[in-house]
Image (cartoon, rainbow, N blue to C red; front, side):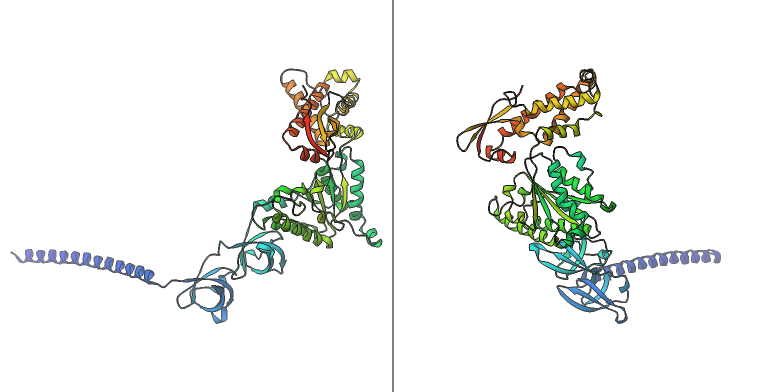
Length: 514
């Protein structure tokens, strides 16, 4: 082999060795990397468990923080990599096995739910827990924005005494959503006397508080509107709120609460919602804004204690309402209006002077009242059939004449309007006519039915417009509904709810109107 060939073979060998060395170096580097990774995993697996503690306060100069862990407050050292200025009150921090804070974590997302009673400064809050117990808590950092209000629900860590999060509870929010009613006294027919009583009882103290103070009179806290269903109690309450809103140009808030909506099977929930309602009212009224709390169907919620299905519920609910009503005494802008079809079922303590001071019966309308109510729903703006306009000699005359005849149909007491034969406690029998069941809601239903019949006839190709026949058909339909309702109810309950004689023990339908 020549010298050149030897040199070339040697060079090839050197290159081969270099390649092998490179591959070996790469393998060693990969092995080292994998070893380091395995060592890291081993360290993670063998690392002692870390403790979650709630951050309370920082001491930057000392590189220490105050935390709550297991219900115990303590000061711990902080690892160099943890910036204490980024920590927020109530936030979790992780402590290693030597009790050194090494890292920040999230906020707790579970805990006891409480209801806000009032704010105590910018960073503390007074809350009501289960059973009504009051507790003073500190607010976590994200809650210190000033947007909390009485009645809000908070998630709290009871052991650390920190409120962590505000939650929205749909049941309460739905009840507490205030509205500004657009109903006026002019929209209510047949109740002039009752409206005058309401205005004297509520509006006069609101509009002339200085005169009340001069005479040493205290405005009533509330009124009770009672009477048969559909008589206009809710309309009066809304009209009161609307009328008060014109005082000084401020809007009036109207919190409408139906009794059954507050009932809750869970212990303490109904009382919590009552507290939330009054807390919201206090907040709204603090800005010199009139607030009307309207309790509809009060007998369903504030029944005489010991008479309901569950006396325990009533024993807790009624005192809660009484406590809140007594607490309204210092407020000048809150009025409570209750409505009930069965005032006899409401606990007497709710109705005593100093609470619902004024009681106004809203009865069924007489003939004049029915004419007035009809005129609110049937006006010249409603399309009237040309035949009716021609028959009465003008549009206004046609409307007035149709209303007159509809009222005649309602208040006629003969075989055509006899609905029931009632048996009294004495054994006597009494006929109940449609006139005995007339209400504002019934009249509104008659007009609404008549309008729908007119629309259906127009869609079928007939001449458009409301006729007397449509109105009479509406009257007959309402009569039939009254018969069906009585047939499916207890005679005594039906008679009491309808505002009829309480001595009725049985009711027998006379016949269905054809």
